[in-house]
Image (cartoon, rainbow, N blue to C red; front, side, top):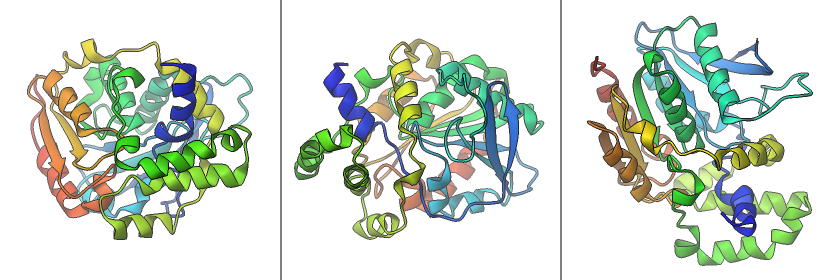
Length: 308
């Protein structure tokens, strides 16, 4: 990826979501090696715990609370959310903190161990999809079911297809016109850029407008975004995902401009016996735009038996 392309990616495309003024559950923090991790647990059911890994990198988990789909899933199992290191409430006194992919994997496994879960169901959204694929490659013994949702490509940036400029040329032109101001850290320009970006993520104008009315750009950590984004260039998960033996569900919104559905289809094609579901009235956030269908899909998938 060229330096110019990476700069555009860091200000728009790699951003999965911004800090959202949606209510969150009461949470706790614990000290993982090199990081303070904040987490929330929703539900007390007896089913296999589901850990939800948000997108970004550089944003916290709160945008996930835009949907009540998780509350429905939590009727039968614990549903766990957390803020990735350096974001949201996962901050502390860690002057030498690093943001490597291995750090992110280790944090997720530390959260699993903290909660006493030997096995987990796991779902990752956007950048979180890459993270859960990497986690599953290292800790397959702890994964019962894996859901990869509107994920960036396992080959990283070079294989991820973005459709913004093809479908929203006027929007990307407005972003390009403010690129210098954004690079200089102008807060108004950054907020406008994020608003423009978010407006291109939805199938439904009504859902889009309701979401945009409640978003705040304050949770974005640009340093985390850049550190994680630069580090990912060195990884290719394509050989690893072919080895997955547990049940895998790959989902995408038909109108996802942030990551073209072709990316999801290629992930599905590479993973033996995986399932592939397209949400026909969704963009990048099927759990928000089609919550009932999303819950039904997830519940049907999660009852399947793990292969040995």
